Image 1 (tube, rainbow, N blue to C red):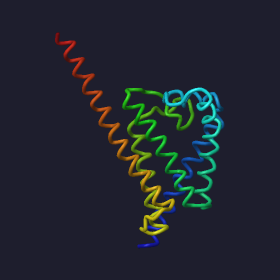
Image 2: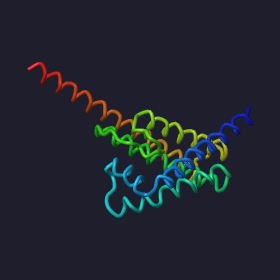
Image 3: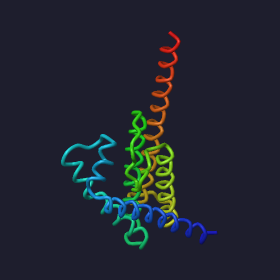
Image 4: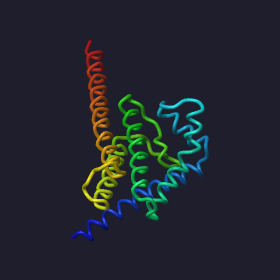
Length: 185
């Protein structure tokens, strides 16, 4: 039983590593202008910071993805993956809560993926899987460690995401109510 759980933990680390590696490579191949355009869709960064993130982000994704796959600095790599995925999750949830619909920047192709609550949920599940994998690897003692930090990141992100989802639903309900009132008058 313990071996199966350890295998699942390792499998989740490799899966997240492969997702980050692929996303980073796709961003590198797409080029800086495409990454800048994806970042602009979120309307969170401006100017030099936007360009800096567009240059650095793909390489960070590749490095963290490779570290998870190879098993180098597993705790730090897992925390890095959790922070990346949580950041993406929060950016998407924020966009959705504001009623925006734009490419997520997760990959490339003729029809890029658009921000969605499914992608937000996917990231929440992946970060949770990373936290569980680290708990399996290091044990349940949540002292000041990468594992404790990862659990804290996942918990905080889940709460903020829930709040943004509630905000999005309230926004949609208000829009519907306004439409009904306007058409009935």
